[in-house]
Length: 107
Ligand SMILES: [Zn+2]
Image (cartoon, rainbow, N blue to C red; front, side, top):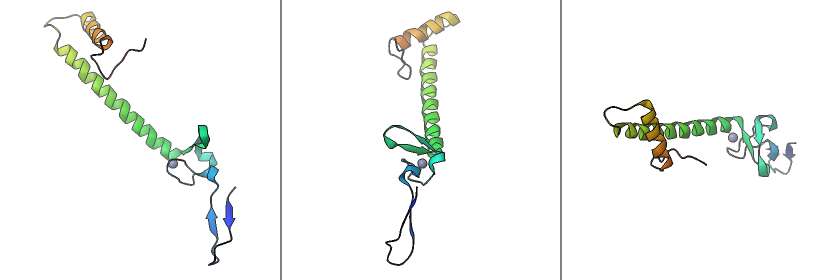
């Protein structure tokens, strides 16, 4: 619930938004319906979620590009003639050996 401060000496009404309507990231008064609530009273507005989604997508894209580059480097080390099975095996081997830094196997 918003509160109005009548203490302002000039007679203007100072608007104080309800803290539950404020985005924890950008500080905008987004309104409760447009906030996603998380632990510890953290509320994130739809605009910030869009920005976070873009940041996440960019990070995934960079990781994918790095993985493709590293896998292409494996392909360059293959003999002149190889089967798809041999190529995939080489990729899996290098990933397991930790030679493809952008990809890790979790056992
Ligand atoms: Zn925000």
